[in-house]
Amino acid sequence: MLVQNRPVAIEGATVPENLGGVSPDRRMLLLPHCLRPSDGCPGRMTKQGLDCSACQRQDCTIWQIIQEAKALGYTNICVAPGGRLAARRVIETAPEAVIAVACNKELREGVEALEAADWPDQPPSVVQVPLLRDGCVDTAVDMDVVHSVLST
Ligand code: SF4
Image (tube, rainbow, N blue to C red):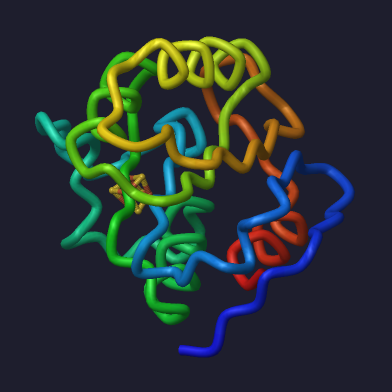
């Protein structure tokens, strides 16, 4: 896949300059489980995060983002119930870049946890996409921003 190393400016997200040099298969996409619909989400929580693999709920924001990410070549996708599991999965899978969608508090704590962890080389770059509406249930994210970040 052709990748580019160029500065990135996306309104609504904090994007490290090297993101374009990291292909999707070397990135991790982190989504918060609060983006799921509060009514009837069939997902099952596992040690790797929420399992959405058998779900076909096209009205779900998470479903829509996962479909786009997979089509772009992302293979490391985690729907996390909180920052602790998210940080553990980043450390376990050691991606070169992380695209993290979360509320500002979780983003701040997640970045601090990654910076404090032991890395053989250096911690992954973290793209921060704050939620448009937080509050832990039926949250929302700007899908245009997500699309721009995923495809950068
Ligand atoms: S895709 Fe959405 S509705 Fe389906 S299991 Fe995942 S979070 Fe729940």
